[in-house]
Image (cartoon, rainbow, N blue to C red; front, side, top):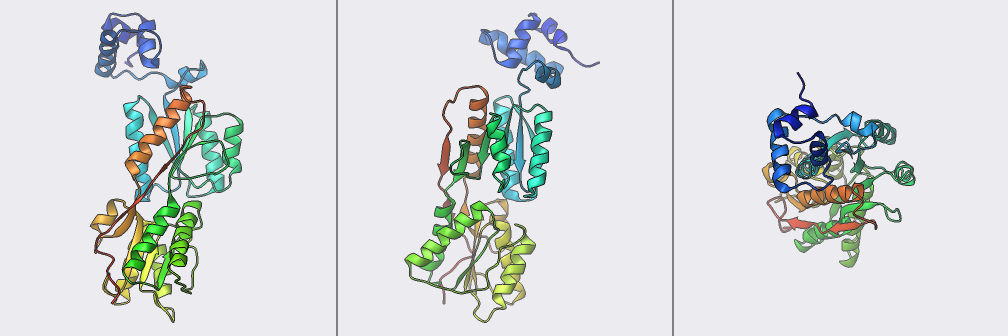
Length: 332
């Protein structure tokens, strides 16, 4: 038989109202009583009826998270850190993967609203800002992580992608490389990383023509395909900056199939510093995003808005850092 709030109240020796206050974090309850009730809830494995709570206008203690690609280790690590912080604060996570598809974004937003989530964290592309604007006009609690929407009044936790791209290119330039190609997807974060790369090349008066094209997907196969195209060109690069680690790993695979050694013949830099970066061969030089910090801050600002603790929208910009491993070396 399923445990009810009445069972919890009886076992804890308190009223139903007291149990409700502890669950909802409201009212004046002594710390001793709160701990006692929470211990009984855990012992009896009591699960509050979130649907009933939603129908009465109460919090369901559930946050929706939209990410573009759960198979991408950056987003899976980000989701895990958001979930961990939510758990610490008493919230559950409802995760949907959109594949950068605007229609999926709209469908999942509607699904989350029907599930009565208290707020939505967006890590998805949302390249069509109308999807986000519609949520903001409804005054629905929204936070954005690993994305930036300048000009829109939304809580944002992101990194300085321009700075990251600049650092990656500057590192390769400092090693004597001038023929530096780039692999990127046509999304805002990658475009900002490209802009940083371009500025570094400009600052060092380096110009390099190569057959650039955006990849359609941010995976190993796409990185391998584009790197192979670059290496087959009449003026192949001596270095490649890939805008995420999966694309960089694909570039390493392409180099090996061309009989090139990394980094002796071709230097490669990635972006994100996911778990794959340190275990690939050779270990990948990459621009590290502070994934744990991003996840924690995204959940913090989300819950502050839900609880009415924040009156102004926040924009938290974190600085990425270059992590040098064995995939880059001085140009011979």
